[in-house]
Structures are given as C-alpha cells and as structure tokens.
Length: 278
Ligand SMILES: NC(=O)c1ccc[n+]([C@@H]2O[C@H](COP(=O)([O-])OP(=O)(O)OC[C@H]3O[C@@H](n4cnc5c(N)ncnc54)[C@H](OP(=O)(O)O)[C@@H]3O)[C@@H](O)[C@H]2O)c1
Image: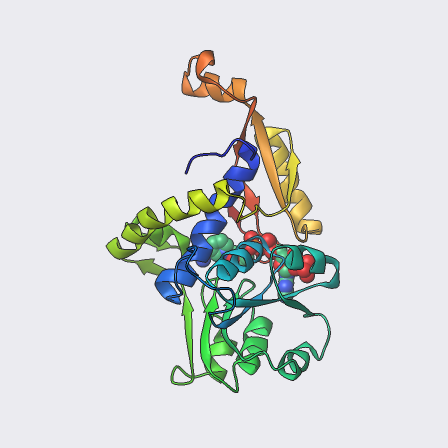
C-alpha cells in the first residue's frame, strides 16, 4: 500500500496488520460486501465488535460500517468516545455484570460478532448474545474459545477463526495451534483488497488506531515489553521508531533516497494476550 502524505510512517505501519486481520474476517469468512459507494448505510446485518477499543476492534468498526452493517461495540467506559468516533452506534461496558442483558434488552438483533478478545469469558458472553437468533461468531484470537463452541453448536451459530498470515497465500505453522495450508484464494483476495484499502486510507474513511509513539528503537522496545508486563496500554498501541540514518546504514541505501526522517518499526504489542507483532 502507498503511504498517503497526511499519515506518518508510524500511523501507516500500524495499519497493515489490523487491516489484513479484520478484513479477512469480514469478507472471505463472513462474506459481507466489500465497501463501495453503492452500499447503503444500515443495509447489512447488525454486528457486534467485542473489544471495540482494541486495535483490531477500531478497524473492524470502521470497515464493517462501510460494508453497510449496523455496528455495536463493547469496551470500558474510558474508551467509549474512541469506539463512537470510529462509527459504533452504541457501546456497552463489558465490566458491568449485566452487560449481556443490556444488549438483549436493546433489541438490536445482532447476528454477527467479531470477538477481538477471544477469552473464555468473551466466548460465554457472545454465546449468550447469539442465543436467540444464532448467527456467525468469529474469534480474532486463535484458537476459538472452547466456551463458545460448547454453548453454541455449529447448527445454530457458526464459530470461525483465521490467521492474517494466510493472506500471503503460503503454507505456515502457527506454533502450538495448527499447521495452515496455503490458501491461494486468500492471496487473491488480498491482492484485490489492497487496492480497496489504499483508497479507504487515502480518503480518510479508515483512521488508524490511536498510537503512543516512542523513540529509542530496539532498546526502547525492550523497555516497552517490560512495561507491558506490569500495565498494558488500553485503547492505543505503542510504536517504536528508529532514525532513518540507521536504517539507511543497515540497508546500504544512498541518503538521497530517504524522503522522511523516521521510519516506523511496526512493533505492536497486544494488551489482550501480551503477544507481539512486528
Ligand atoms: N488472527 C490474527 O491474525 C490476529 C492478528 C492480530 C491480532 N490478533 C489477536 O487479536 C487479539 C486482539 O489484539 P489487539 O492488538 O487488537 O488488542 P489490543 O489493542 O491490545 O486490545 C486492547 C484492549 O482490549 C480490551 N481488553 C483487554 N482485556 C480484555 C478482557 N479480558 N475482556 C474484554 N476486553 C479486554 C481493552 O479494552 P478497554 O480498555 O476498553 O477495556 C484494551 O484496551 C489478540 O489476542 C491478538 O493476538 C490476531
């Protein structure tokens, strides 16, 4: 994807993982229509983004909305402005004991859930939310929580999960989970999607997740990992930048080819399971 001028390298670099992961759920898996000017607002299903203030969540809200969904989200009260600013119609505080009952009472007819948290607790809550209508539950975190599968058998609610890496179209192993065969169809979709995504970012229809940009390169990163162990950031991602001069020296690039001062090492740390994406 090309970097639009109004986005910093850090912001652009932070988009890749989340845009790929989320769109894989919405399109090849849930089979929603791709965003286009022909899609009418609210013409699609009611979709809940569980963990709406996560990095995957804020992208899911925006893209699902562009596909015509009525979008709802769960988050903490501190992040309700964030999820509403990205296009959620209503938010629910998952810290409240009766939040599932609040969702049921709102009569939203939710049939699709993108669970960006994927814990046993979120699986239980989502199974209750789909209890009446059934529908499609997707856990962004792999593997899919057993708690959902136990409560919602496949004939009433489909439970899926997928890994963003399949977008490269090559076989890979996800340690401790499974071996994933090459999926040429996913690679074909990725090629088509990147053109759509570029346009969405260029026209400001998809905004990056809030970032906490730090300096210090790889050494700073180690400090950030330590910080994650004690207090995970909420509603934002920590990104570490590195001076262009160092990159230029490493890669043997002529200095004239460098057009910006910094480049982002897109290192994003998950608050949910403390895994690290680079
Ligand atoms: N399938 C793939 O290819 C793929 C790719 C990328 C990420 N992932 C997975 O997706 C998951 C989300 O990653 P992310 O980077 O989007 O997350 P993130 O940005 O680190 O999520 C942080 C937010 O999650 C919410 N949260 C944390 N613990 C929670 C809990 N127990 N219950 C409910 N909400 C909770 C908090 O919301 P509040 O502050 O509002 O409470 C927090 O702000 C991770 O498990 C990650 O491994 C999968």
